[in-house]
Image (cartoon, rainbow over all chains, first blue to last red; front, side, top):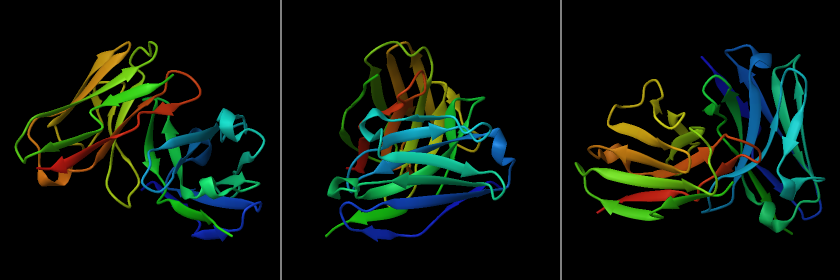
Length: 119
Length: 106
């Protein structure tokens, strides 16, 4: 069965970086792209960006350009999202999610990783 | 592309018929998806391509619309349906979500 398992809770100071991992299993990793989505406490869903697992192409949200990098490691079927120069308003649950191109929708989500930014 | 959901919150009773609307700021053909999210959980796919029911989702959920106006309908609310619902457009980048509709028990 398809599973996306994310790394654990992180607590960071303002200005630091965080790298969240998302290990996929149960399907051919390079057949599906990934999207990263975040959700601040009590708020809605925010799209952060997209990465192709076949060629590494990316498309980032404009408000995160220059601070976010998405990568994949096909040898371990793992996707990564790194966010730099963290601010308090980056405190959120970060989700990785698999995109099913045939239906143009997210069909599987990771369990979420809470990142808290606090001095 | 901005997606505006209405209402932002809704109180309803078990057995009620409920409709949630999602309006896009420009046409997105049928590249519209609906998700359900419960507290502390990741969203769950309900409807894709505006009107297609995801496998395993109960048939009381349905979606309709094209262009700029879309609806999610729950024909007879069940206790497990009380959650927050989001629409999302996949027509072009940046991919965007509606602000969410919180469905509460009356």
